[in-house]
Length: 537
Image 1: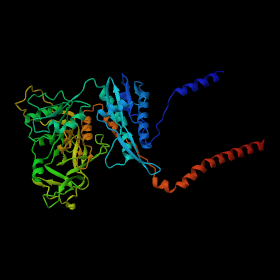
Image 2: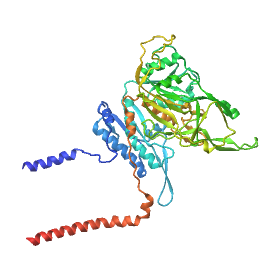
Image 3: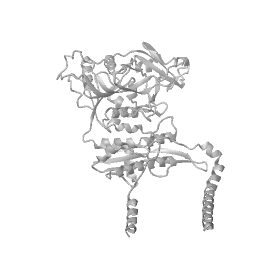
Image 4: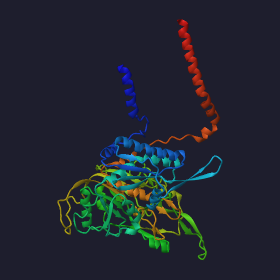
């Protein structure tokens, strides 16, 4: 009697319980411990609206199902994390577009040969405590296939959702600052970069002055392409800011050149740019060389090749001084990012040996590059390429530094002009990123509208400058180490379509006959066993 009661109760319990084991080699269905820690402390509802709906191919369905599965798993961990089961209304899509998020058009060939066009919105919106953030779900890396981009998008889902949740849950908005006073890029020239950062931080601008603690309120400082030297007072303020845990994104040029002269005269001299920062950065483990990198993997520029000035004829020619920098796929900052475009970039050397600082190369040239020492000149009338010169490979242009840094001002005299002098620190933990190409942060304007950072007007191609810059600042300020979620890697296993097509008849026959043969074998085996058993009795 007890057994009859226990069995139905056990069935009911098993029906309510959900038990899952991730048996995949890459653990694609396992939630990262950092995500579990973030979701376990959720104390208010976090609602997700998924805009990726409608008719879509199998790849986009896989992206949608992965997003739904992630939300379901997070909901299991904390019921306050909820996915809206209802499809968004028309006004929701209009509001999404007003925020600057555009749909994508997917073109596919139907079985009858016609091309079908589908409009998809690869976005999600996370709402928490009356604040919301739009999460792009699709990564579009130039040079990769559609399947590879979708696979990278699936890899980045967990980080995208948890980073948005972490940002919305902050009690106060952290502040970052763009430094001024040394000829840095003006507000309009880094407008797109600043707007992208405003989704996460309060962005201020200002000069250093002489107050020793002026940078204390800021989580990170961005130095965008300075043109004038830093004073010893400036260096001391930055050094002690770093010793106290401040984070710095250095966007520096190693050479001085003139874009105006290059545009007007087609020629510009290039000379070393002395910012009086070489000794400071050397102390931290890097050196920005006063030389230009050239790369055969580069942008093209329109050049007038006509001999008649009255009838110009423009032809795109490779501009080796504008390299397309490769991103390191083994670091969380640049994983799955597309190439980054730069102009007049320099070389970064790692110095200091085994100084305890963890150094990672983020951006580098291709395997067909060269270095032009200064002084020299750049001449648009001579764009001939000597292939033999481009014999260097993977020259670093951007590096990340993390660890306990030693102060540059240890055993040095503190500048007298400082106010509110504090006891100097000789060592401190921090993170820094040094980029030897200030141009990657700049944006152009067209029809009084800012173009995205990294957008090339001539090829109409968007490169990964904005994503690289934003991810750099997020890594610098990420004490929760959520960016480690970007290390997730899902192996892409595709069917060999050519082999499948060539052997389709064999596959079809196997699919039809295999189940029948299995049933026959089972039936004959059962019959043989029964015959043998009853013959003995």
